[in-house]
Image (cartoon, rainbow, N blue to C red; front, side):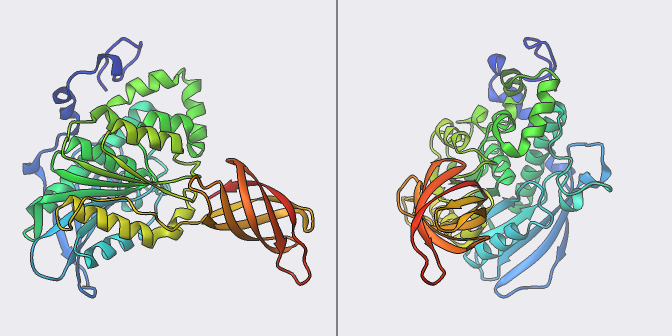
Length: 403
């Protein structure tokens, strides 16, 4: 990192940030040094598939992390197609959700490539699990890992740009969770990118480290090192998509967010959308993980947005209302069923803010259904009844975590 000195340590400082040209060198790559190994995979119905590998141009201490592996899915029909790089979530072991999305996009006329992020899947060093080394309580490591991911994405875009059957004027990025955060930044940095879809993702890595419950232990370790939110935010500023807002003025952005997300907090997502200006925001009435139940709806909305952004579908794009559900785990106190552990699925929101909804669940006393109203992130009250014969309706409360 470059030392600016005004915060008493190495790093970047937002208060003395220079124009984008100065920071662009951080994410530069050498196209002439790129060598792609391409292997054709068994064809699928209406899809050609390939495995692509190349060497990362950003060094790291682990040799395994230097080989970037991608899986590319291309429509078998003739013509030139839009193409996107799809990025997976934190800790993903096989990018199964993202590979499915790539295949579905290819069937819908958009070529798609899933790329392994640093320290994930085949890039995991021996002795570690996928993603273990991505976020450590070391600010320099965090920045260099984010930087490596952006440079790797730019190299993957280079391969797509050179692909004969890809329209080089219709390149995009799609990311889920961590992948969405990387996609938002890469889309601002690389002016070849025309559209970004970020699912359950925001920018501002410092704020994510400071507010996400998933990263609580990392935050506490950084605080013990003397970091404040202001200092961390300043040092990670050039790894924040909002720092680059406006650098790629023609970029179209869609953010699909989960209303009850404790991994990627909704206030962070709202602030990202506001700071990026032109970003459009669609809410799922789900938690971070239960959004997987809406995979088909997310896929359809992603495809429609991309086709409009690439000029392949008549616009303008208007955000749709996506079907979603959320899973809650907690302690139920029902005046008829009693107190005990329970799990429920909220299937139908009845208000636009997602506070009131119909749910069905099961407790140690049996199955139940009811109308629940959220009083906060972790508590709801409701009116419902057990599904047993002769069960009577009654008031209930539930202390819960939404997944």
